[in-house]
Image 1 (cartoon, rainbow, N blue to C red):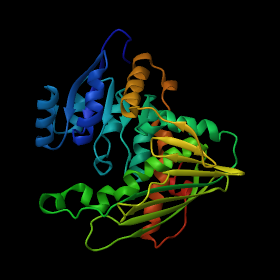
Image 2: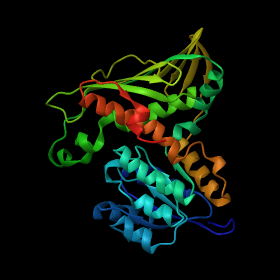
Image 3: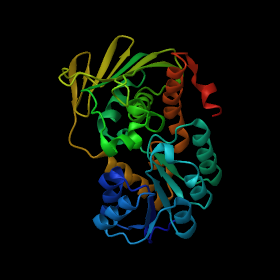
Image 4: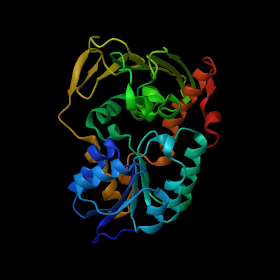
Amino acid sequence: MASTDSKIRIGIYGCGSWANRTHIPNLLKLNGVEIVAICDSSLESLTSTVEAFDISKTYRDGHEMVENEEMDALYSVVPAYARTDVEATAATKGVHIFSEKPQALTMEVAHKLDDAIRGAGVMSTVCFRERYRPIFQEARNRLEGQEIVHVRFQSISGLPAVPTGAQQDSWWSDMDKSGGQALDWGVHATDYARFMTGLDVERAQAFYCERPSYHNPLTSSFNYCFSNGATMTLTFISAAPNFRAEPWFTIFYEGGHLSVYGYDSIEVNGEPVYQAAEFDPWFEQDRIFIEAVRTNNPSLLLNDYHDGLFSLAPVLAGWESARRNGECIHVPSFMGKK
């Protein structure tokens, strides 16, 4: 356990563009934090990260880094398909876990990591950073006590680029590894719906529109049923770049509705009630996680790895539903255990 008068020692597992753009620079801005080592299977990613941040200790194998380095916390920033048991091994050594989302591609792997984290009693969190953004906290406060009946989320963008050359070999172009937008941002949308409403998903159904020319679906549509019987539609459309701006989230409750326009504003029954100021949720979550580790205070965190399973499972269940031609899936059974 880290003491309050020593540096918090961090290992970075995964040195892709996301770690370089967010977590590594964020951590280096914080006092009393030392990145003791970084790891990535790609020599090119390791080299560019070393050059950008002057980090000398590097590994190509996550288990080797966890075995050889003294760390207080591990940042797992590898893609979900690459996660097996490095985080679990770190947890059993008393290392706190920060996991990017999606946490895994199967509930089997997710439970394996969760069991290790809970069994070791270490702190953990999943990077559902928008929980820390004031606009979502404001929406949560305004919805408290309301009887939710439906949540609508939609993300609309232009046609995806068709990968060429080396891009065709990218893991993101492989649906079996990436899951497309519905997995990448679907777990976010599911989590923020849970955060704002306080409800968990009981049943999930999904459909994908795929075309031979594109590696990822042009549309995906999820239907959820929440624990109180309320419904949710979660839709990703890659077809219409000039579509007029509409809210990301509209939450309908008995007698009214609340709309969240991106990261910008909230309307209640069509009337503006909140305008957001500039805010960096990535930095805020990194800052709070480090403070939680420094003070041994998990109550500072707005989620943990176990809670994150309840945002991951509905999307994985929807993915499976699409494979089964839209079969409705009971999410608690799909999860396997709680």
